[in-house]
Image 1 (spheres, rainbow, N blue to C red):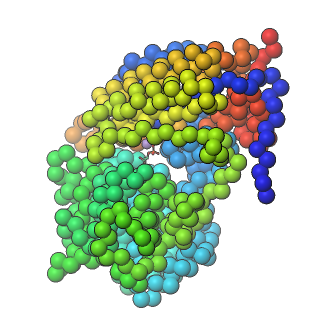
Image 2 (image 1 turned 180 degrees about the vertical axis):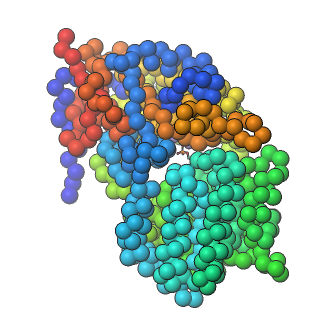
Image 3 (image 1 turned 90 degrees about the vertical axis):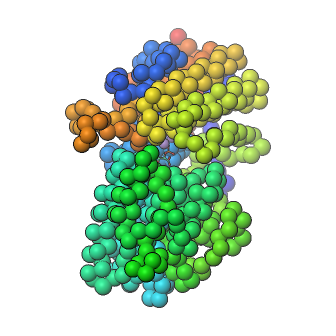
Length: 524
Ligand SMILES: O=C(O)[C@@H](CO)OP(=O)(O)O
Ligand SMILES: [Mn+2]
Ligand SMILES: [Mn+2]
């Protein structure tokens, strides 16, 4: 059925104003202290927006159930935050869909599981993914349930290929996750199932690259997982992670690839013809490159050396347009009628490539100025009704855990906002500034009372991850109708309320099933 895209006119707000939607990545609101890099940094532009509270500045939820995650203990992330921003409604996201499918057992009735199950009799089941309870890309408890479910349904030989995290969870937590998994696998072995960890590596250095930034990352994983080859060989994964972490300047995110070998030095779990493979991340962006390597017959991104004939399924389908992978255990959320990409002839996408091969604390300003100048030019061109821009600094530098660098990053993002708002001013436009989730506003792990936690050596525990904090939404600009202000009757809005708000700023009413707009227009 053709979708009707026509929106009703807004009864009071005019059309034709250029609207700039600025999304600050990893920019939440938290108590001002020394671990709040946004507070420590000089951010005069964002500070002045905040002075517009409560009518022109407010907070919205960017985590948990407000963005379709299983619980309010789940921090926000880019995928779910941008989905809520674009969809204007709350759809259950990957994490939640997998939870439901596992709880109901439906995951085992689906086409995807039945497909891989064919290999259980004579082949090995390989599980590849991020070993963590971060809940951004994957969750350990889901892997544990899948191991149990698959072994109860005939998997006799299982190999797990782990990627250590340290980005959504504390650095150093890899050891505990590996110990937990080893314990589960040894229980399976007691039941006569040949189950072991076969390979591993840190997520940012092995396998989980994204946007085709560096295929070398995926190749390192391929060599270990498929070919059974890696520079480091260990008898056990606990030993591997402990030994590799002891090398100065290493961390969970960047552990080098390793394989587990048997008494004779042979890799215990290369992927061979007849095996089944499941990539257990539910989030797509950092698994889709491996999915291509596993599934495509024609593939020229690196030399795969040996391409095993396998039955492969993703936890979810990672790319709905490429239908990749063809088989998957759980169907991804069906998000329709979004305010996102729908007409190539009317939209232009510009990517300013990030520096590659560095950790962003080395260059915390990133390409903020370049990005802001592109946005400025787009606004000044008069060609676009809406210019949407993402400023990555707070998040990408926040993930490094480097507090000083994150302060520099926040200042750079603020300066970029200034360039964009100045352009809005020049064209008589409107701006809406928000963020997709928190990160830079809190760089330390805290106890329930909010006190920073110390590690054994008395140092603070650095928080590299996103947070549970709300994010700001600010509106303004010379084109904003003078009567527009934030409503006070929506008590706990979230990112999903932003889409209807933006539609109003363009002079339209949002579809009835969208989450309500944040603004009202006072008569004057
Ligand atoms: O880097 C990533 O993959 C995630 C954290 O795991 O961050 P974001 O959601 O901001 O992309
Ligand atoms: Mn983000
Ligand atoms: Mn992030």
